[in-house]
Length: 294
Image (cartoon, rainbow, N blue to C red; front, side, top):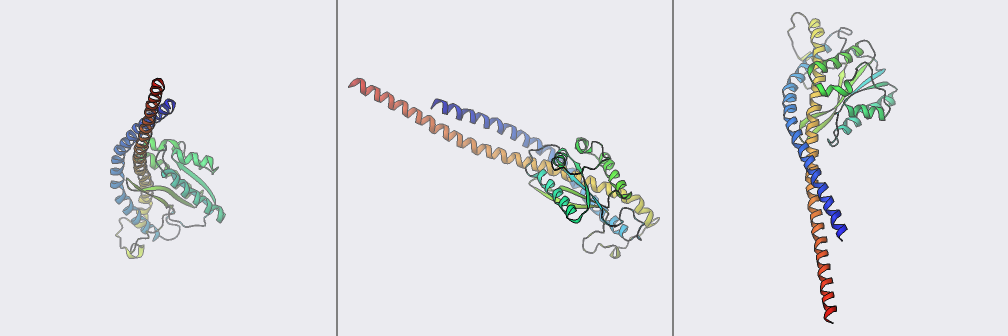
């Protein structure tokens, strides 16, 4: 019985140590989430409005005038999968990998070639494991982008994507990422990136919006559309970054709660085993005493 008690004590100690780790990770993620949440909530309204406005303006151009809004036969697709560099964040990374897997399956069904651009170590690991074609020309962005997440580094990736779309390497680009809603909810999102299409919001088509252009529509689109695309990718990265910390905070909170429940069960088990051991010892003493008296 002593061996059994020692085993339960060891398990109790192990659970307590694990709870300390998960509780610390929860607090760290909560601190990081606040900063990441502030960044995406400040960026999102600007990015959404700018994207919708320029998409409508670009769609009103004559065919061939807007190189980033040109709709052509889709022969090759670029799937940009945005995950985190680290795990322990619940289903966060798996949800994006599922979206990318679905997009890959659709390409295979339609006979379209595809490449996957993994942004995040977990996406790169999945691409290697599933033997996807990994896009080239992006350096170490897959592993280093989230180490230095800012508009400058996001723009470098966006510029390469736009260049490859403009020169015909890809005919379609989609983003697969987790959109941040709140600390407990992340929305897996499959978002078109290129070509830039008109906004689907009610009453937002190009014919219903009257813009005044200065100096002219074509020059505005030529100058501002690339910047809008950079902003769109940066928004997706900020969304994913905030969603990651929210998912990790929630996962560590649940892990800590589960550890507390397991700890209570182990202590009950330990107390019962200890009580049984003491009862057995008392019975043995009584039995020995009665044998001596006899």
